[in-house]
Length: 419
Image 1: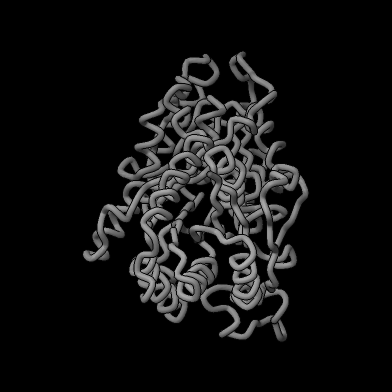
Image 2: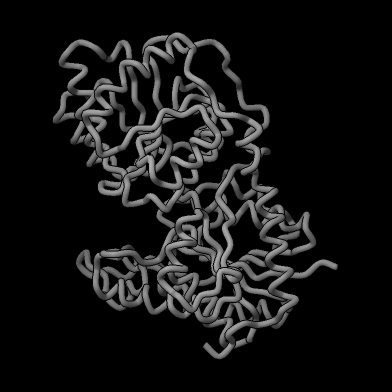
């Protein structure tokens, strides 16, 4: 018997520029194979900073999508360049709550879903699900792609207080809390002693095998200039590229790398001006190229032609795994991971192989490692990820795990309805 789940997600096609789009989109596709019919409650496309039509065709006809009223307070409610403070709490899309609650109630009355599911890091999504849970008593699964709060995060005190309030209510009211990395689950269990481990599970991010169908394959060792590709956001703090840039600048001054031997591409960094300024100041702008984002499939094709795939993840994010890590593993290319060896990202990459790991913050270690890494690529000697181990992270398997959890929650009924 097919049951319905109401999925509250800000990031959904035609939104582009966030890896969160893929998690919700793939769940909504593959839950259908496990006797669950998704109803997607998302935001009107005007709220997205960037849109594209590429992934709209991937939404199955059986999936009902409701795009509720939503504004981006930074663009739509700004007066002389500044938005009203209250319109940006808990985030810039708080107006989505105003449209999503009546839209969600209509969906619930008309289609009678058995369970609610919402996904962060747009905090308003959890706030919407919390409100609908309280109003209807439907059991709720709260999906945390990232942790909502940490020491010093969010850095704005008012935002942090609101985030903490929503997080506490989710811990009290949600039947299940879903995390994408094991250490995030441990962090929440430590933070909330009253939280039962049985209410927590890990469903990691992953890749969809269908996205890799008919991609070109390369088997010959790469030739100069060796091309490194970083596909995705480069944060100024959590993924600070300065140690890497400084290491490249040192090697360039010594004549050990040049534009004829190395090309580093930062695709869709989200901090283009910052990265471009750094590479210009260091005199390596002919080696490190800051480039615009590509549509998803074109981006994968670009990665298949790379000599190596570059991943940046600072120690402050040890309990997170970038979604691109799973795609990198499926592409079966050499990976250079500049990340803490103690974090979940390093554990995943070590498990699957094919990766050289160096701490992102350690400029000296990066400087010492790069010449040998480049040499191993030229010789075709660098190992590749193990396809069998990478295959554990296919999206279809993760949708199965979510379907099992949805069924358990629906069977048990509402938890914490009075929270």
